Amino acid sequence: MQKSSNKGINNNHSSDLDNYSVTMVGLGGWGVITVGRLLADAGLSIFKHVTFTSSYSSAQRGEHVECTVRLSNDEIASPVLLHPRCIVVMGPAMLKRFQFRLRAEQLILLDNELFPDTIETDGVEQIQIPARSKAVNLGNPQVASMVMLGAYLAKVNPMHMDLVDKALEKRFDTSHPEVLSMNKSALWEGSKLVINKKSGHN
Image (tube, rainbow, N blue to C red; front, side):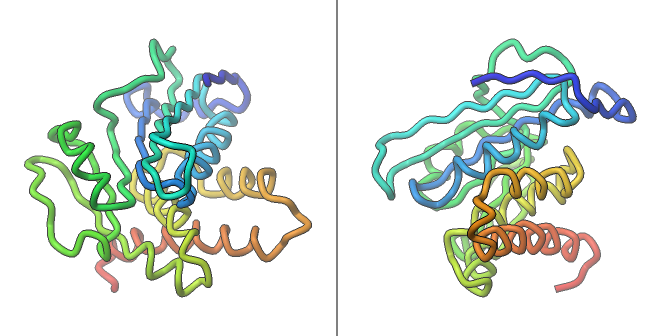
């Protein structure tokens, strides 16, 4: 699926910084596709071109799921991308499938509970986030992917967090405010985890 929009383009960025790509990988039922769509939907408000692609090894819960989002003010020749600028990995088995796609100067976000040791990735920046434990503390381990999305936004800064917050409000049924509130909390908690790392706080 490819979308384009000319609404609200942020002209304050240079063109080199106006191209973002992220691949998120995990297991079915972990919300990987949901957070990818949220990022793409939010991106439509400030980027001229947005693409979202997804793939499934099986429709069943617990099987491999992958999605890629590209955000750009330049035309996107193809939504398919072998080496995105960032990879968000939600499980150890997923890393084995994608480690060959890592290149120097890329960024990889990992849950440090699933990856207790540093992964050998020469020239690749690693950010380890306690996403699952944070999600459990919030009341639902399935919002770990939302924690990771918040961490990605805080680290890479492709757009203001408020835009994704608004996309959440559009996507989730307002008749279940507790679900919306938990997902919003997970998003912002993920952001805080990265901000605290930058400032040297635990």
